[in-house]
Length: 248
Image (tube, rainbow, N blue to C red; front, side, top):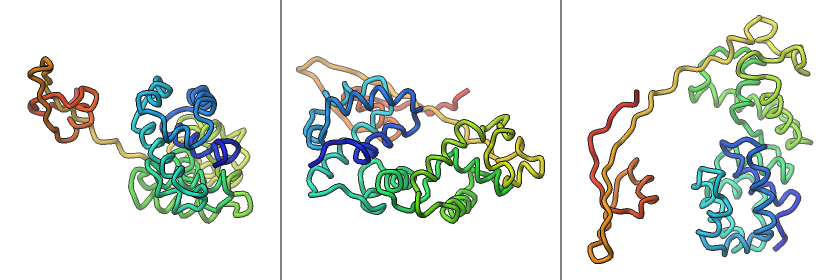
């Protein structure tokens, strides 16, 4: 199977970019390409070695999902190239699948992230709550309608970049925006009021007590989320939940 290069390196990069800035990802991406040039190299790597290469990038579930996807790819005769097959890979959601399908393989799928939602909410002067499912679905449909079917990857990257450096959450740089003349929010003087976003729910915390024992008296027990996510780091050692406390 071919190495991770050119368009075939993009799936790995896209997963690394989930919730992480490009500048932070690039050194890790280059390191991964050098250490694991082929899907089989990454698929057969030990988890400890793989996580050591990932150390510092955070969100370690992404690394495990990426290795799971590499194992799926290594078992196939060719890379998954259509949206649905890419979407079936571990850790790949609708946005990531659309980004990979369009940028790596030229398929006409709009990649809609937070930047794109903000741009489209302003362009269409959509006053609905951006956190609401129907609003996001409506804007995603608009993105698919506007998508350049001949150059979907370039279109998606351009729209994401527009949101990242011009159509900012605060103080958008409308004077330098290449599509300002099409922006309904700008025409209405609402560029600083849109998009509308409701306040996110307040986070809660859960507390747990963990114990460790000597080799002769080691015990293990399961845990229910959200404690389960933490228990893995403690080797699933015994624990007791206390009453949940609301964050200050």
